[in-house]
Image (cartoon, rainbow, N blue to C red; front, side, top):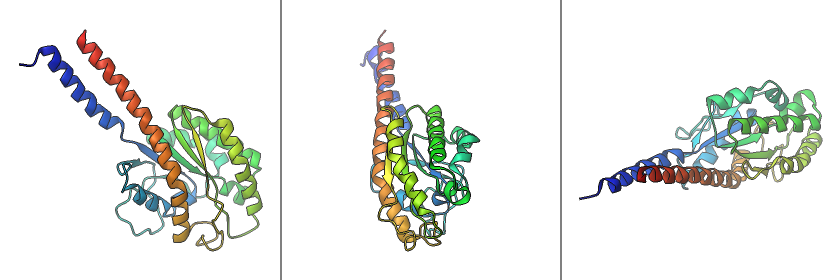
Length: 249
């Protein structure tokens, strides 16, 4: 016969293991403008994750828009907003509400295109908006894992000089904002991407461009998921130890 205290410990362990399974379900928010919303790189990224341990990651966000990706299986949830400026999202605290409704462990950000194309905003102002957005992410989740893109080139107008200026500023900014608890990874979506042949309309990626973007996002998203999982497992372990210790008293 199992002693009562041992039985309680076993039951507590089983409960803790179940809780650990629940708490390690990770939530990922693709965040940005139309280059996140009306595209198919999210579908391609989701499919790349399906053959890995990250197949159960929950994509989150208030939108489900895409670009006729012909994929009925993938998780379409995202926080892409066509036409939105990083500066306006930051100054109007829009991300705050989006994250309240859809909390995340990992977030990717591809922003700045509309700031440049629509209003020719200064790079310093865009970077300041990025700083506000990172603070809002961390206010939502102090351990948020953040992946920021150096944005893709355009195939129209004379905007790429400023796009490159922004992209050059991002690594230094990210290093300044980086923390152990909430790291920032920078991915280069510009290099190797053709604004003319990889975009369907000069702005949004075509199928080849979507493939390139998904392939660039993937390693950094996996690293971010690994870090987020480690946080949750550590928390579950502490909770399990506390529960077992309490049952022994």
